[in-house]
Amino acid sequence: MRSPSTIYLVTRTHGLRTHLLSSENVKTMAKSRNISEIVDLLMRSDYASEIGKLPSDEIDSVRLEKIFLNKLTERFFILARNAGGKARDFLDAYVKRIEVENIKRVLRAKHAQEKIEEHNLIPLRREYTLINFPALTEAKNVEEMVSLLRETVYAPLNERLDNYKRVELSIILESFLEGIYFGRVWERIKGLDNRQGPKRLVGEESDLRNLQLMLSMKMRNIAPTLIEEMSIPTFYRLRKERLTELARGRLEDAPGILAGTPYNKIMEEVIKTPNSAINLETVLSRRIYQNASFALRNLFLEFGYIVAYLLLCEREAKNLVTITTAIDLKFSEEDLQRRLFL
Amino acid sequence: MSVAGRAAVSRGILLRLREQLEFTKKGQELLKMKRDHLASETNKLLSKVAERNELDRRLMQAYESLKAAYLSLGYTGLQSQAAAVDKMEIRVRPRSIMGVMVPEVLIEKKANTNSVSSSSASQAAVELNNLMEDLIKLVEAESRLESIAHELMMTNRKVNSLERVMIPGLLELISYVEGRLEEESLEEFFRAKLVKQVIRRGKK
Image (cartoon, rainbow over all chains, first blue to last red; front, side, top):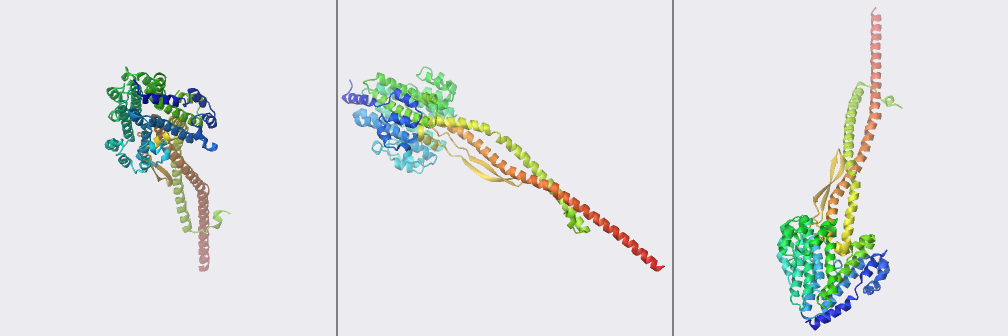
């Protein structure tokens, strides 16, 4: 039996879902000829209040991206703040993905000793995070940055510092951060009463992230031992042995290695696609969002509905960023449609 | 007015003129050698510069990959991925080719794109990085070509002026001086003969 707090949260999510843009809205936007046409359409949505604050001559894809990401953060944290008990623990851990992305951004900049400012990060209000991002952005190097994280959940990052120094690849630390993130979310799923839906969505996402990481590294001819080291240690339907085999095998053999898992078809699609490196993220993310859409239709009164909603919020932000950027870069409508997650 | 019209005439001057002619001919030979070397260098560089069209095509392809990455990551996302690239380090030093100072670009450290975590951004970074090396080589070849072409033009002018003005002028001057010296020696010979005749008549 579902707890009243879960029922409340799911009901609340049903309400919030009506604020999401429909596929038709997104398709119409993709047909726009310029940014002002998109803005006209967005003025009838949740983004209106923020866009309305911008002077019309200053509206461009970069400013709009900030607004979309800001809205995404708000949508993520509204639910987390309204939850209680184990659901709150889970959602708190789940929405940390924004924090993790920001840490990764700072990490990349520190690795290349580039200057980074807060406006380069996804807008995240101080009340939503325990990480002192202003201090992180001021850190002199990766070591100092990692030391600033020692009192947080990302403290184990320090253990990978030697590895990072040895190979001088920031991606080692990035994948470890993902590992920490998925590990924490996975742990909190166990506390939920109604864990099947979230488990499937988070588990498949973790598997697909692992696949993305593996393939992307293989395409760059990174040493198999290093690829294995980088895998996210949260396995759902993709066992560790398969990942090891994948890391050691040839790229062309990937669909065969994944036979019997739900990912062999997607792998065939990735391998067949021309410019597979470019389309890898799109293909795998599409699968994650398809799972979310499926869950949204089928887990109507389950906790999984909330996770699906959060994923669809992310999908909406990505779609809007893609559309506005494509309009700015004068992409053809067909090209744009192919890259949307509908 | 010809050069010969103003020249003083003596054996010493003739010797100096001959030395000058010898020196000028040697200079002309050297300049011709320099011209040939610069011309062959230009030919080599021209074949490199001809690769520009291919580079343009590859640049457009890399730009398409970059656009695709931009599309999937957005502005801030792509900016962050770009920050993970270890920068390329280059050094420009002057080099002399037959006395012409040309720039030589040395790639001291290649950019490392392995830290780019997004596969689309990584693909764009790899394509652009491979292209960057060739672009630098093209820029180096083009700037070399510019300096060498300028020097080639100057050398050609010098060779032409030596060949058509200086050497014919010196030859003309030498033959004038030789002619004058021959006339003078004949005059001297006749004068000595006359003097001998006068002395003989006086004795009789």
